[in-house]
Image (cartoon, rainbow, N blue to C red; front, side, top):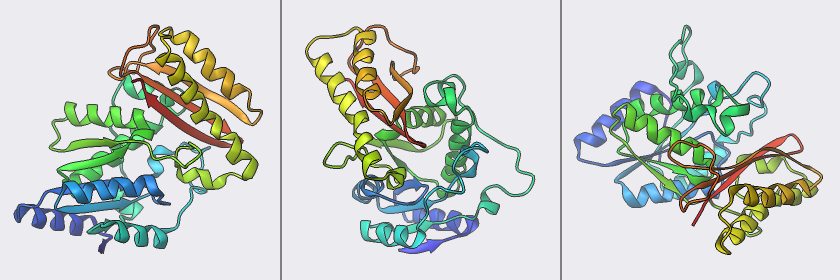
Length: 280
């Protein structure tokens, strides 16, 4: 695995790979990697000729009061894991190259970015779309791999790709969970033992929702009531949102349809977790 720190060098490598007819796969990350990230890398290795993985903690998606400085970092461990998973190039750009002095350009996907997570993090998806578009322009991937845990992010990025006629295909892979059901997240390390147990209320509420739907319940309000009751029974949990939405426009559903998204954001102590499922 080669480590690339310069934007122009990464562009030249991508151009060279493409000139040889190689298909480039790309896995953008903010580091502090876990099995979910590595599942994306392995899928890229399977589907493409050359895999690029980036590690960049994107300041543009953090509000001033959020945890940018405290976001977990362990670059050497990340590099070891990326190499083991089969990454060909680890792209680690400097913040000054990604956002040089005088930087003024940001990308927005209106309406979609204002729903779900955008209700309480209005800055977030502008930062995500901006950095992902920049990374796409630098790496020039044929395929880019994202996880279903960030469902709204994937929906928004797919719309950005479509609206801007970008030559990249986005692949969304299933959520990777611990054996007890907790969706893997870089923020899980922040929990003490009690909080780790409390966090299970998210996945538990989603299982109850799926069970209720499988039994024939299609009233979204009834299913959401089940979800909220399960989460609110946990003293350390505080709901940011719990919604059932159409995956096309992220608007709330009154009646549940196959393929709808049940999306949660819940605070466990000071840590905000997201989780979701696609209704089947």
